[in-house]
Amino acid sequence: MQENFFFRRLSTQKKLLDILFIYSKLNPDIGYRQGMHELLAPILWVVDCDAVDPGSAKTAAIGEEVENEGMMLEILDPDFVEHDAFNLFCALMQTARAFYEVGDSKTSPLVNRSRRIQKDLLAAVDPELEQHLVSIEILPQIYLVSVHAICAVVHS
Image (cartoon, rainbow, N blue to C red; front, top):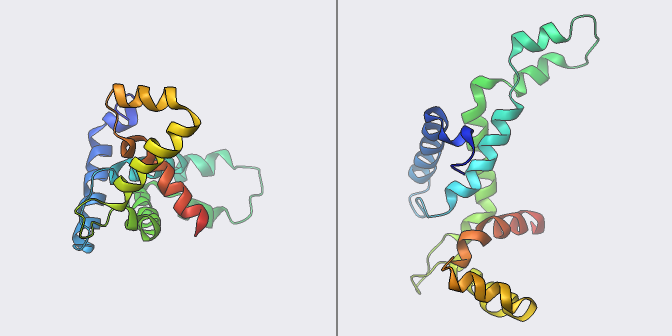
């Protein structure tokens, strides 16, 4: 997502790297696999965008009665963006990790499933699109990693 300024910031890149590093250290059996950053990036972005500066929030709420304001400010504290993104990423990976595990075939289930979706299913529904993706050499797992993760979460 280099076109998005948020992801060009060094502070954002450091958070992404730190989260993925800690995750891989805590999960040495799977480590880091290509595509995990594509699952983490939107999580970090949303958590960062939702963060609320306590000083500005209290000023805006003067004269208004807001229930549980303290709890909301604590939940959306910008000091915990990295922490919160890490925990959400770990929760997502509980379901999505199966896509990144490599078995005896040395090819991950994610790659195998993505190839089947493109070569069998997409080719049957939209052969022109499937051929176009092949001709421009876009690997199916590149665009299907997010779809796999979303489906895994929905079905769990």
